[in-house]
Length: 190
Image (cartoon, rainbow, N blue to C red):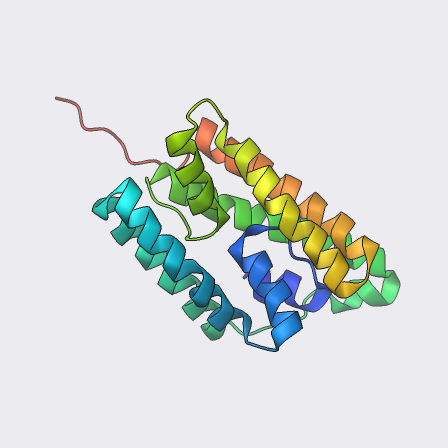
């Protein structure tokens, strides 16, 4: 929903494989959902090798469902009216609402011991080897590269700025979900 309602029409690419897919889609003209699968599947194979088969199966499900739902959910420019009032208002709303949607979904996935097959998977792999690093900080650095690319590709500094704002919202939402263990499986009492 974040991509098809907020990011596709505004050009925001707040990190992640989805953001990277938006950037590459703009450059290559390949649909975002196809680009997402093309980038995610090799990462998933590496994740299964290092983080285990159970992790890989859950992540595979998310990796395949995300582009499928990008294809099924209609692309609706629901913030178009805001652009008529002021283009920055549209970017603010898209960054905020898209960031909360993406951050919530990643936070829920991480609490279920899986990833969405994007930079969160890369972050988990890095955390596996560098356990002293915070997951949210790793994500911020990885996704920061995508944010910069979004501004360069669109030749628009505002796109990069609001992509970064959305990224910060995503990171804060992930931290909220993972610190509070929202939607985490309950441990059975012995």
